[in-house]
Length: 247
Image 1 (cartoon, rainbow, N blue to C red):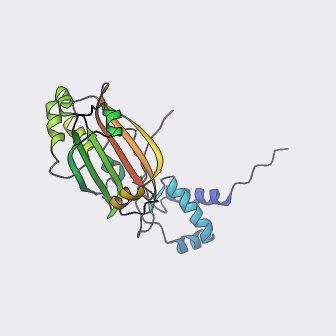
Image 2 (image 1 turned 180 degrees about the horizontal axis):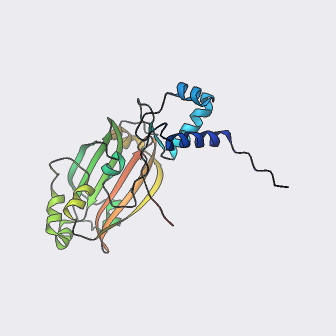
Image 3 (image 1 turned 135 degrees about the vertical axis):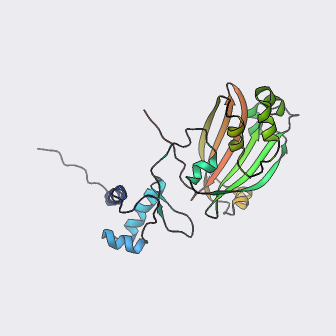
């Protein structure tokens, strides 16, 4: 006699029904989802049950939800954070991202930049701070430090020149680094931790201080030589950060 199969939670069944409808192009990628009342009626479920399934779909990156806009169906995952790519490309997914410059100057070492860029107390290095905005909403605060000019010049003088002045079109430092250093064997390493914005970053992103956020750090190297270190702060509601994995 076959063992009884465990019952699946109704929210899981509903989740799978919506995913199947997306795969069947009932809700094509890039299209807005119906309103909650209409979708609940179409699926024959209660709105509380539907809302729980929609939250799970957002957490898994199947749907995208932004303040003041209806949920939209995300495009199938593309190669993402596992590659060295500018954050504006990763978050934009082909949509235009506005880059608002907060700071472009020479900065004294911080604990973070000293540790990852191996700076001395007398070093002054380029520091760029920008906010990335998608559909009018701030979705990422980027804080990026470059290595000292002398170190960059040893690797590629053009790279040192490119990072010494703000670009004509505002962008992240990583975007400029990848364009100017395309002939260099760049590689990166990253970490991600759960955090909160805090008062200062909340003001920069126009969000409450207690807003949950993901803090992604990134260090870019040529061989064993660090050339850039960055912090990317993504508040709740930011687009999903794609990462493709394989065994």
